[in-house]
Amino acid sequence: MTLSAEAKMTGDLFEVDKRLSLKPVVDFNTYLSNAFGDGRCACARCKDSANDESAYAFAHSFEFNGIPLHRRFAVTTAADVLGGLKKAWLSYNKEEMPMTGSLDLEAVKAFVEPSLHVRVKPLLLASGLVKEQADGGLQLMADGDFV
Image (cartoon, rainbow, N blue to C red; front, side, top):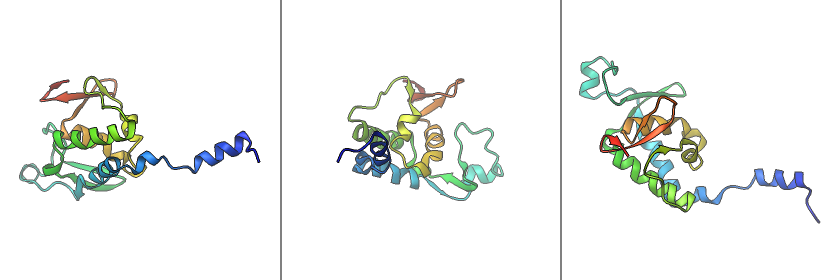
């Protein structure tokens, strides 16, 4: 029996990309899920400023889907984020992640669970791994300088 083109396309919709189950990809999604804690940030700086983060270089508190969360500083340094991201990228794409220039956010989201997409860009920015450009693109950073 030969499948029609329409049947082949419908069948493809239900096939799961096996690369999404690779350990580094699963680990990065777990990391992304655990990178934020419940509620607004309660660090000394936030307490002293009554949670006014306008003078901060990097955000402490976030709201995703109406839920307030804060960044877990101990596990979300640029080095931590980069380490997990590079492993997941390599595992998913079978090539090293480009370390200079722009970071393709859609390419990252390709191996991130859809429910976690809202967390990707805020984490990349808050960790200092990337800087947002005027055009909305993300420029990779290294030691505070453009890569």
